Length: 463
Picture 1: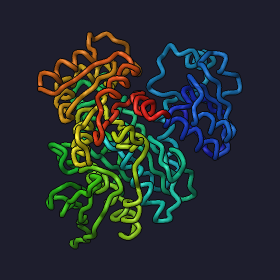
Picture 2: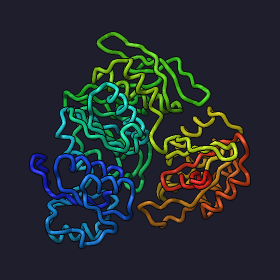
Picture 3: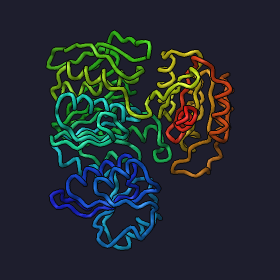
Picture 4: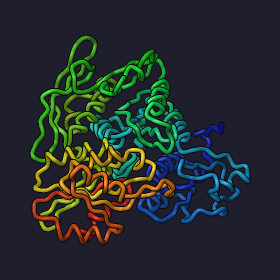
């Protein structure tokens, strides 16, 4: 396998450089003196930022973008073998590596690389930990899968030995990493276009846990079913967290304010004793109490953070883009946007919304990928039925083509069977017109999904 010498910068080309993770890695390498080029389908704020930093970015992927001076090509799991740039690189015998392998190699340049994994909550938990580390003045390098307002993007380049990154299980990407500290937030059935079933996913997380060295630490949600199957015989230290005193880190006295933001007392067991202090969050929902416990466990138990700095950071953290993000009001209807695209995430978001002031809860959902929709159809219907009224957009295909005979109309029928009113419209214009006619003052409208459904709320607000 090709090994980068970070003391000898070379010319690296990124296929899909505008992706949230790819752009961050490209920026890290630019900072280290590498010559960076890349291609993407269209211009974005991320590509413009990279150009300002010195990268050469071309729009449209074609063989001619692979010039003779390129010494390494990096690509993502979304790039198919027949991609013209990948084929040209192979034709020219230019070494190629995946984004995950590159991230793993970057990790090896830091004494304390931290990897945050889990089917849900990675971006939020990585962001929470990032805010805490910044409050602790640790000067970390951060690679986040979303935009964090306080760093003005998804990447921060620091000068310390701390490196924090998300670790995604899709295509087993995280098995290319070299963490010293890892977190596993949860394990659910997802990405079933790659994994065979839930057990296959659990096996992958077990392998991820086994990557830790003997002096490393795994922070894991103790409420994961059969958690010992993941943690047994690990050579590293294991810290569990959850909502029971059976765990090393746990929460008590949980309350929510009028805006559904949680407060609780966190208990942290260490060296036979227990530290307890109050935590108030700037983000909503019980699921974020769980996420914050993982971040606090790492910061306090492993990195020596003081409770005061930890609490200030968590209280001021208002979330990342597209995570229960307040967008505005339209005729006294509150519009929220959320990235939830899996039944577990949808359930967490809609339960959070039930604690948020509203008269009627509307959910505009855009299913994400045909395989996920087909595999989890009953679970989607049950989760979405937590809303008072559901409106469905067409399935966002992402990397897939429709070969499964599944559609939003199929999901609509399942939701209606459960007694929840549900409409389907093939265009955003039709959805917007329906909402304008039917939403009333003090209603709460959530646009939800991993595609471009957020545009509906922005269009309604005239953005």
